[in-house]
Length: 291
Image 1 (cartoon, rainbow, N blue to C red):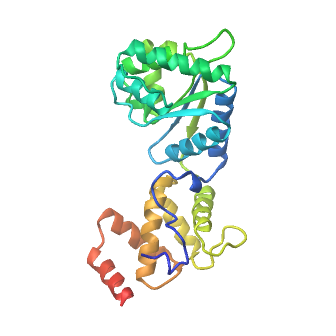
Image 2 (cartoon, helix red, strand yellow; image 1 turned 90 degrees about the horizontal axis):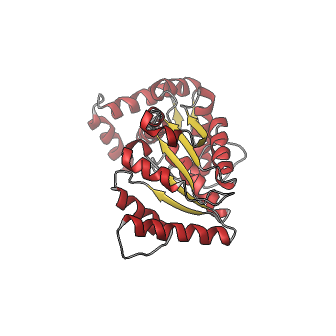
Image 3 (tube, rainbow, N blue to C red; image 1 turned 90 degrees about the vertical axis):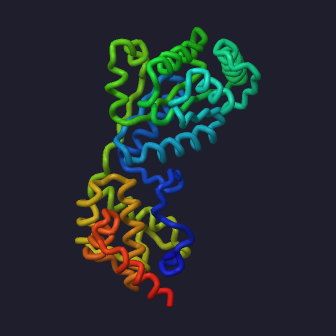
């Protein structure tokens, strides 16, 4: 709706986890580098945690892209609620292994053969499990057993568990202590601090400009300082919430025929998201803008 008005070639604040838009704050960069190190040096179990909306999925996509660029085979499990057989089948399929049997033993045999073949060819393999806090205890025990696939010197499969903070509490259970003891690298994502949130917004805006300029500044959009402060107060530095609010801010500013983002526009956008603003007024502005 507002792309031409702001001279953009795509929406800057889409909530899908597109690694193209990854903003590498100090903590995000450290997490990405740690996970890459853990995979490349075959450290076995790696854990990434963070609250909802802190950018875990986007970081995962960036990790997968980087690993694939290094010729690492990656299987990505995004539905951890599957049965043990379903998880094994999904892992094999993601690695490109075709097998007619759904029996656990047959699935494990095929996976082990694939991993040994990768090792003999000097290649690495990684399993990334998103929303890992939703894995059942039985599934986690099976995942632990996958880490037993190894030679005398090397782990055949690197496993990255990605989840919300309760994943850490989950792994502290006595019955999962064998798995917890095998975790070699732990990373945590926290909400962005104010300066990071400001840079995050400007970074995303810079990526969608039709005409690139030096730095992060977009001449077609200007944020007042108090607008940034109000935006941060509402979002508390959570990237997903920032995306949702900023998209609404741009829509509100477009409806008001302005490229200057004021504190009032931020407040109005937030009210609209919360359902406390008269939506009719916004749509009236938008239809008036199109005439």
